[in-house]
Amino acid sequence: MPTHICIIGGGPGGNTCATVAAALGAEVTLVEREIVGGAAHLRDCVPSKAMIATGGELIELRRARTMGLEASGRLDLEALRARVRRIEEHLHCGIVELLSSQGVRLVHGTARLTGPRSVAIRVPEGGEEHLEADVVVLATGSRPRIPDWAPVDGRRVLTTRQAYPPPEMPEHLCVVGSGVTGVEFTHMFRALGAEVTLVVSRQQVLPGKDPEVAAVLETAFAERGVRLLKGARAVGIEVRDDGVTVACDDGRRVDATHALLAVGSEPNSEDLGLDAAGLATDERGCVPVDHNCRTAVPSVYAVGDLSGRLPLSSVAAMQGRKVAEHVMGLHVRPHRHLDYDKAASAIFTDPEVADVGLAEAEAHAAGRRTRVTKVPFATNAKALIDGDPRGFVKVISDPATGTVLGGSIVGRHAAELISVIAVAVRNGLRVSDLAESLLVHPALAEALAEAAL
Ligand SMILES: Cc1cc2nc3c(=O)[nH]c(=O)nc-3n(C[C@H](O)[C@H](O)[C@H](O)COP(=O)(O)OP(=O)(O)OC[C@H]3O[C@@H](n4cnc5c(N)ncnc54)[C@H](O)[C@@H]3O)c2cc1C
Image (cartoon, rainbow, N blue to C red):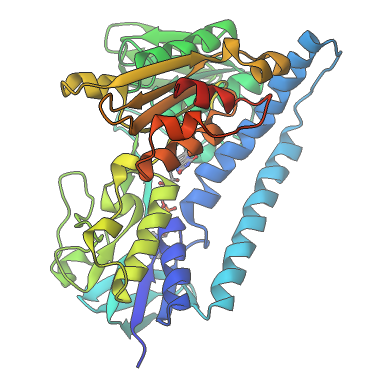
């Protein structure tokens, strides 16, 4: 009898686990209450990046003037809405096709554990299906956090999931929260033509990121007319017919037409029947897991945002893959464990921000000796040709061995360029391996090789 795996949630964690497990010979049931592809495709990464791409085109059109071209752009909100839906639909169909081709059984319904190896599925037509499995994988993701002082109404006060695009284009948007999501939405709505005020609770956007990187982004925001309200924590929102007022803890107030909350997310762990399986959540509501994403109950695994590790699609998908391999008896040795410290991540602003591995500030804080080399794009031929020499590449290495430990990039196409450093960090390459690679000229990637000299 093949191993039967029941997966709850069809986001990147769940659907990757399903595909890999089925390819390895498992019998797989995947339960999804909304749409396969998950919040990643329907509500978070994909729609946000699709809108950012449209905003990016508008910025390019404006930049074209500096290259001797006359260009103008007018936003068609309905066409944008249709484009976002088309991309989501395309990706959704691709995943469903892949799952079906691997023989995964897809069940539309809401599932909960009824024991360590049993699941009840409430189906939309009414009634429940009960099934037994050898292994249950929880991949139910997360949703935007809504503080109790925020009167979200989907019209004037929005969560990120209500902004793809919102019913009406904000004239003046007040974005609350300056982490990754907050700065991406600030960039997106400013590029699409809204006036934007960003409430920043600390003294820099992207708290925790390299201050030099944050400074480049803040300069870009200032040049584009984004207003930063630093050192201010939002504590209330008043909604009127014609707009909103966001109140901050230091007494400052922002009058805007709309407010958007970007203050983190919380895991979908309620109503999952965790008790019935003998499981509990941690203080954040996440389901604790070990290095194999296994919970305290051996037949239950948890992946993706629910597992409380790095909340990224890419990480959820890799966890899903590792779980499938582990359940099917592959990769049980420690060197195959997922190393979250080596996950690359990017922020899709203009300029883009990306990093991987050890950060300079982190190394200093830990008293670790490192070699940091920095190359500004202002000295890179391709950046000058493209008319966008903002930002830099930083490579962090071990001074004794030359091993690449990490890197930060802020600039055009940073999200693509960081992959090179990610491969170096993951595989223990040395700076000389980067420096001696024969790269294309002219290319932005040449800055990576130079940073490794
Ligand atoms: C605005 C925004 C932008 C982002 N951009 C990026 C990005 O650019 N790159 C990146 O790597 N990450 C990005 N992320 C993070 C990324 O979206 C998440 O890390 C990722 O979606 C997590 O995947 P997951 O599989 O855990 O869950 P999800 O994608 O959340 O999927 C979970 C699925 O489970 C289903 N489900 C929940 N409960 C049940 C139940 N009881 N029964 C059946 N089904 C259930 C849900 O309907 C959902 O489809 C972004 C997040 C946000 C908020």
